[in-house]
Length: 319
Image 1 (cartoon, rainbow, N blue to C red):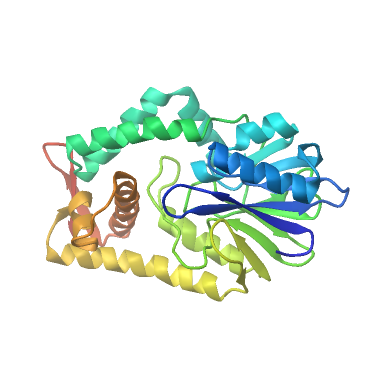
Image 2 (cartoon, one colour):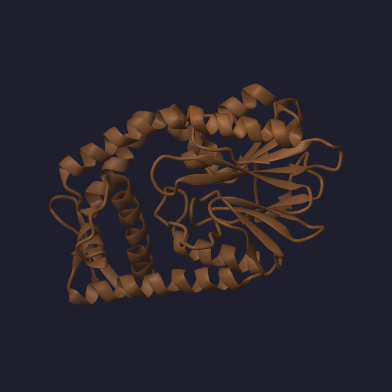
């Protein structure tokens, strides 16, 4: 992909069908692994084969950076830790979130149910989502994080020449990695070549859409020579960053336009946003979280107002 940086692609069921991990050779001859894959045997076999081919085996991997806590990036981290003994690094907010979810699964489920009820989701659909999350947990067992990456920017301990950049929005604690020598950036899901990363409400930040816009500005200011994404092909320069920034701002305007048809819960707003589209539970969950993030951004700016209905659902209207 770039001098001293290799890509290892692992399979996923569904869409997207693949996710990338990256191996970067460090100045002392050891290797840094960024991300991994979903916690399946097929993904592990692909990752292990790549590590053996590029680095010679797990003993050469000294640092493992996880860009964010989504299961297609963190799912193999516990097995990587066991095989390599590598130091595991993760953005502070995502590390805290992952640890909390592992320690308090019942509270996590209650929070998720309350969030979905507030969106106006039907009870039977909420039950289906909860069942899906219980099944998915097996593909992303928790991993002990050795140190957190905190602040807007900083050196990556044990990985000379690389620094982390806080790039939230997709998750609250998402980080990208920047090699100062040549401007290579391992971007995780912060910059994707053909699709826009999902944004969504979270428990740690008030405005994930605004966070993402600010993160893109930080990336553009580097500036990057080459962006290596978690999915898809490498991206050169800053043109795609500008496109994603415009898309995020444009989605806020598109959600505002949905309210012109009248007040709506988040569930109803998603129906207006994607009329006639059949969605699986996971896809609709993402759509609800993202639409709610834009609705709350509009409310924070005074462009929308909301009120809670008797059933607990929140209805938004243009201010």
